[in-house]
Length: 319
Ligand SMILES: O=c1[nH]cnc2c1ncn2[C@@H]1O[C@H](CO)[C@@H](O)[C@H]1O
Image (cartoon, rainbow, N blue to C red; front, side, top):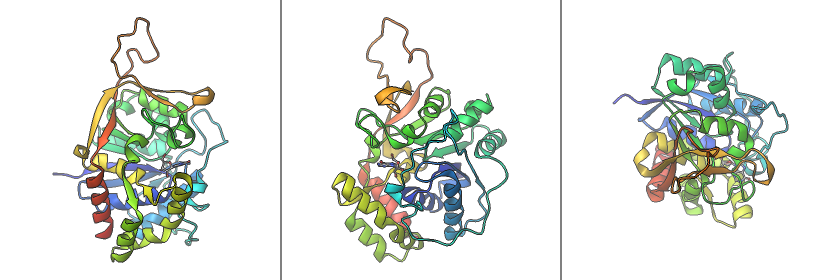
């Protein structure tokens, strides 16, 4: 079978690095581009880190298109999670700057171009706030139809968030953009932290990575310390959540998860700004609601966490 063409929209990010490397070790997918976004770092640094990771992987053939520096509503005050990933986004390792440059096209323009080139064939794996995807949807009315699938890491479905009890970091980064994506009519699969919090790399797993000769495993062990110490402080756990690589696995092997389908809206104001609210359709509401007649999306519900962690580990060690 032909590998599935994917574009990874990313804010690298330690778990983004894991996801990007995992993609390179996965014959099921072919990475045709990276697009960058703010989130774990500002967009400029996300672009540098994306180029750096491609150089580490020896995949400088893959184009990087820089994404938006502001939210969909043009807000410039962004929430950057440098306390999770280090000031450089990659565990404070002071890597030399990359030699490569991003392409001229913006992320949104690149997404639109590729979706038009291969209608119905491309999967976007969105690992940060959804600004670039929402821009593509707004700039090209055919994008939602032309893009094959959007697998997004975002939301906290029926559980607390990780920014505050209401909201998960990627949705909080640009709630207006997230709402645009959820009701765009595209084939969307949302993977929230209700699922990714089950996929944990333990201290023992990290030791295994360190002992393997895998190139990616070795690189990741260099950058993982900051991510582990953040989880230790914030969650009192000896391990880290494998958010981004787990979401990527939805594109690689969807049968490791189960899904439900319904309308998701995003709260854009008040103390619950960024909340993702799924209508489980158990009630026929008497009134028309903000969910009525909106397109549905798929939301991941359960995960074979053991298989997910094993697949991520195996592929990263075999590199
Ligand atoms: O405050 C935070 N707590 C936990 N994860 C965070 C936080 N901020 C950003 N991320 C990042 O957002 C995605 C999952 O929500 C992950 O990529 C994680 O690394």
